[in-house]
Length: 317
Length: 243
Ligand SMILES: Cc1cc2nc3c(=O)[nH]c(=O)nc-3n(C[C@H](O)[C@H](O)[C@H](O)COP(=O)(O)OP(=O)(O)OC[C@H]3O[C@@H](n4cnc5c(N)ncnc54)[C@H](O)[C@@H]3O)c2cc1C
Ligand SMILES: Nc1ncnc2c1ncn2[C@@H]1O[C@H](COP(=O)(O)O)[C@@H](O)[C@H]1O
Image (cartoon, rainbow over all chains, first blue to last red; front, side, top):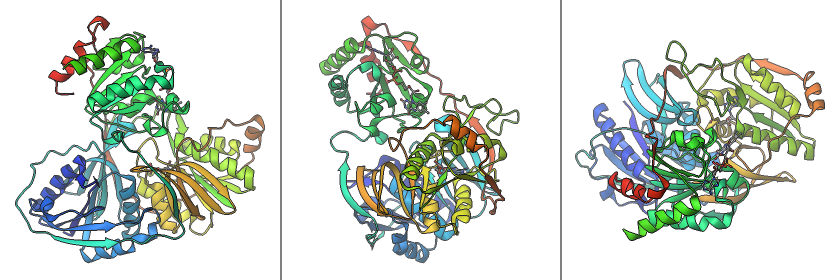
């Protein structure tokens, strides 16, 4: 069997929780299949991070230009992959790696399968469970052949023991060149607040808040909880909140352990983005609001009364 | 200038997903289908560019004859012609290979798609097609200005938003607020009747085959807390280690 590659996601030297779970999975998968793992990432890491995994052989820091988009610049990466005889690739979905993975898939003519929750080896090949219809269903598919790329959904569910054995890994670096046809004009990084797709707790608010100035209350509450803020689509359409905060069918899909929805009716298109939440709390002054049917805890009340009281209670702890 | 818009055909966003009698497939009976909402944004922006530049606008769908009414709707909105690749492929990799095969020798300047199809939510067809054709690629694109052959785009990235400039040819995955969804005019509907939908046979063999499906029903507690005791919510969440 050919070797395996993992792309890890990190920010300011912190490896994302989902990438750690992925390393656990892939290093075990490699031990089972008697093969080796090569890890790729976009920041430098000291080798200690990987020493606990017996099957990991090398960490490669891919140095990228400020704008990675043009699919031709990955030639050095393809060369590296070729030398390492990699046949299977695993990552947790990000826009950056989706683009790279697409180029790898096309170049090697191997399938790229997206939004995967689970992978198993079966007699005929590999069986994959994928999340579909915005989390309303899953499908199981089979792929033939030993080579593929798998993009896990952020909520992929693989229970495996953690680190196994130890190894001394080699570090290396490859550099992708800037593509002159594509120029970065301005960057607007999201700063300060917690990024929505990764947040463990999310406080969402809808048109029930009535005016953008009322968001101070939502933000204070979220801050006290260490939560990210989200909104419904009409709220971002009205420019009350930035577009990247809108969750739902046409917005971000979230899967936090706790979602607190304030003044949101619970339209099916909104639910499509929050169905993956472990527990849902709904605060709405209309007892008939459809969201209550999809809530773990519901409070029928005026958000302008309830939210400040909850905040007070939190602060008093 | 030649523009290609690729549309997916997906169950309406309000659809309740169920399984068929074999329990292995999503039941398509009783579902209403729509053009993917993101693809609709791409098409709407493409129509505006067509009006601005007199570009030729072709709509492409990889799918079965069941989708022809929706393809006709795209023609009614302003596309000049349509192509359907007669395949029941459901995986994005396969769909992308079909699109690459078709577009290879057609020299489209701009290929516009949605950022993702809302049925299988892969979000990769545009990147695959861009690489396959050697075109520039950006997704998700929220604003698109087109001037003198140059693109100025506002895109979302993993870290926030960026403004970039790019050149043609390009493949773009679109999302709101790139344009407002459009409604066909009576005249559009009439002229669409005479426009052509070319049907092409598929080329590639599937890598991936579906063997079963499961519907996810998340059971919710639906526990109501009287508003007088709203504060007790905090204790409950604490005791469950949710906060
Ligand atoms: C194709 C398509 C895609 C869509 N995609 C999305 C999507 O991705 N995300 C999304 O959110 N929507 C989406 N929508 C829109 C969706 O259908 C709803 O219109 C939207 O979710 C409603 O937003 P809302 O709940 O904030 O507003 P409303 O429906 O206006 O609800 C406001 C709620 O606030 C409550 N309220 C009012 N005052 C108070 C108060 N003082 N205290 C407490 N509660 C109060 C009301 O009882 C009401 O339930 C989409 C629609 C379509 C057609
Ligand atoms: N069957 C299809 N036919 C034509 N275009 C498609 C098809 N499926 C997906 N697309 C396009 O590719 C985009 C991304 O799809 P996906 O990668 O499958 O999420 C969609 O928004 C469409 O624009």
